Length: 193
Ligand code: ZN
Image 1 (cartoon, protein in one colour):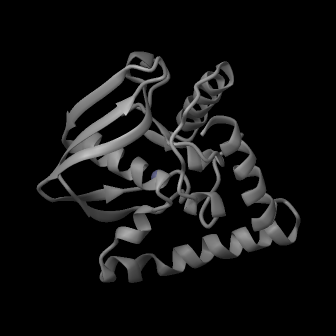
Image 2 (image 1 turned 90 degrees about the vertical axis):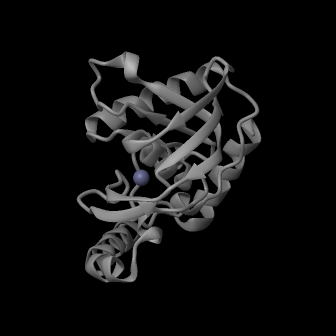
């Protein structure tokens, strides 16, 4: 398992709700935390590790020594959004790229944890922003889709670089083609959604 980068097709996949939590999913979540810490991120969605599940993890301190800050959200839904706030965001699937994104300032999140407990949280600040960024991933949306036209222009060259790098990896046979990716996602969906 590894973190996939833009423009990998799984980042555009709309994930389906999980119906089944098994031992292997627990192991997947553990591996996701390890990858997130290694990349110094605060959140990671299943799409970013090439999995088609409505699941994301958060540790706002990005600190493996603070496991009590680890949170896992399954089948998350935003039940309310209030206000507007603008702040800089980055993404482990677009390493090195940062840009200002406008989002609702406060949100109410409804989700389940790995033990099947329902969670409802009223969030603001970085937590609210991270949760919205991760839920976007599950809907196949990236933060670069939410930029103002001016900011969008300023990141254009960087995006082209990512696209060229991805095309190169495909040409060298280092990455599967779209058809193979879609087939694998469909099989994984059958297993747990
Ligand atoms: Zn991201």
